[in-house]
Length: 385
Image (cartoon, rainbow, N blue to C red):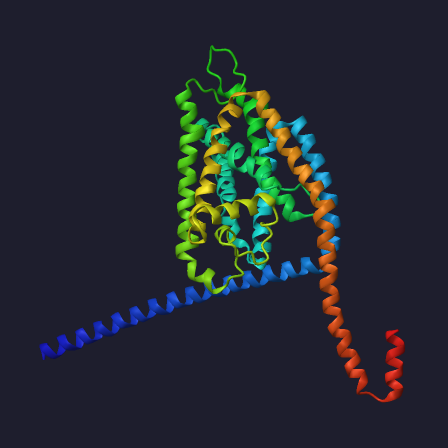
């Protein structure tokens, strides 16, 4: 009897184990289904919002230009009246507009561009400004990113300050605002001067104070390049390893690597002359088979060179001020070139596309009319004339 009881007990325990295992499977399946449904709903909403924006493009363009001009004026006023508040304007801008950009880019299949270095750097800026605003070492790393690769990207990639384009406006501000923020903190913010100078010493002319050249080069050059290398490794892992099959299945999904490899399907980032030259260099130096490697190498050389230039900018108020003026002047000049040269061509192309859509519709109407009675066919031709 005892053996039978033991067998029954083992059998009942086995059933319990199977039931628990099945429950865990069902629960994990439900979680994965909920996750997929949520992802699908968000994607549908992103597509819906983007389509509605395209339908009202003309009105949105006018509103964007109106709001952009007034916002720029308000920003200039705050910059002069309360420079210590510029960092909060920047944080508000980034928290609001980057999620909106993700929605638009998700619809266009450009959302992998949000893994680019500029967003990686801006996320670090946000953490520094909100959580560690008085950390001198972290400030110097952020300064190097903001006035190095991000700042020079405005000039090299020919970013255009166009108030009527939300996309171009956000692109410019993501690269321009961090430098302005760190300029105000370093040279204009009285709160930092009062809080950070040691007792019994003369007030500093700037923050942070750097006593040795080795400390300066370590936190403005070496550490930022280590952080950049970490981003490059993560980007390669995500785009070229973890999501490789997904990107191969859908060639319309754009990344910086697909741009380097010449897969330019509708990308908005390949209109700059300099970018085209860089891609040609990536192809020509070591051949098409090493195009991606050369692109990564050229990007690294650009980052090293621009990071090194932040050291003299960090030490000189006059040079730093002149650099701010250079960045703004370049984006305004490029914006004028875009309005006068690129935008008219875009309008012509849109009109041609509309005509191509309208012509087949008219031909179908005429074909339908040819099969109708003669009297009605005459009426249709009169309407068409």
